[in-house]
Amino acid sequence: MIPRKAASTNFRTPASFAQARIWLDERIRFDPDKPQVAIYNMPFVYRLQPGHTLSIKQLHQALHLTVNNNSSLHTSLHFDTEMNLLMQRVITDEDKNNKNNMFLIIETTYETDEQLNEILHDQKRNPQLFNLAQGLVFRCHVIYYKQISSNHLLSHKDLLIFNFHHALFDFPSMNIFLHDLNQAYTTGQLLYDDNTNLRYLD
Image (tube, rainbow, N blue to C red):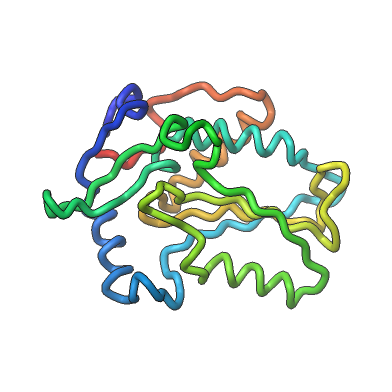
């Protein structure tokens, strides 16, 4: 683990054994230049209960707070040929020139179950969704029923997909992510907790 202050510097450290295993496995199984199907995408699908709505504007703000607060969600992996090691580094706003693109938010529509299933399948199997070298390891996909909402609200027929790359995220981490996202969405702020922060720099 690294202290919070190290996340804001050009700090690099060797990747963990688990990260190296996943990174290497992807390259052994597939041609990196022509990957066929992803095996380490981790999509989580959510739909609102009838009668409830969700503000897309608040969601955007909450996601930015949550991602910024959890360094594993903006950590890059790259192989250092001189050291012959897989290295990891926390990507900061300065690295991205303050463009707030440490993760992606995609909006699409569907009308039929077949179209929806195609979107869900793509989220699970598309190998082009993430870029570990750039630290793009998380994306949010907003799926509207028939048309994108003009009032920027999600309803019960719309869906949300939070998708992560397994090299920087695991199933137990989802509880922390949802806790932080809920706090950021409802309060507009997120307090840093060193005991629950998602970090893979260890």
